[in-house]
Image 1 (cartoon, rainbow, N blue to C red):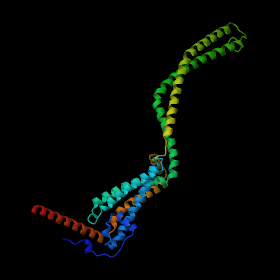
Image 2: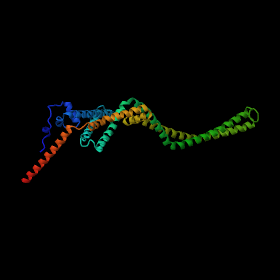
Image 3: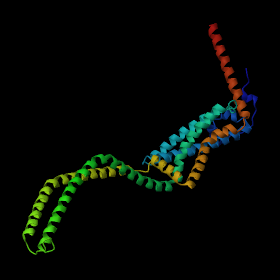
Length: 340
């Protein structure tokens, strides 16, 4: 039987503090084995510090994310702590899976890096929204005005097929009245010209030609009043329908404006527009994204780059010892059952 690794690898009387033990736990190291690996104590403490930093960053980022969609002050805090714990669990699982035997295998490492980058990229968004908060709210104001304009244009496009026939009918009726009114005006002016001597007969007063023009004018005036009486109800009906449609458009526009907000997606869109329209912001944005993603990648990077030491060998020997011990116990139990 293989000897217990505690007896194989002698250690000193080192007693780690609580915080050191906590860092070891974060780095997924086995405390009783790590106490015997002097050099690796600091390595795993460093890995634990990177996990701690990622955990705190994830908690703050998620708390701010939820604060943009939840008004209650406690809900974002509790949800941030919960999601930070989820990220902590994922990070511990990622670095626990990295050991000496697979450190140089591209597929498992690439998968872990890809997963860490995905999480880091999403977590970077709330942090960037916080850092560019003032600029984003200015952009939101501009974006909302553009949304109002786009909404109004879409409404006009939707109602155009309804308004167009009404407008054409109303204009047609108004044109008939205007044409008739012009005829009445021309007849009146001709009649007046005959009575004051400026007309064709050059005679002042109500003479025969003037009387004829007066009759023509009066007849046109009666025709105009009759036409007006017939067409005005249709014109008023068309105007009423158009006003009703316009009132409906304004009502929809007002309802749409109440939906405008500064929620998470709205802020993300504003940030994208800000980046698109401002090169100085874009440079700092991509720089911050890279930095914030590195925060999430640091545990995986640290575990991958730090060299393997006595602890990994201790783990291998301990695992081999436990497997062999278990196999021997199983064989002994099987033999005892067979003997019975």
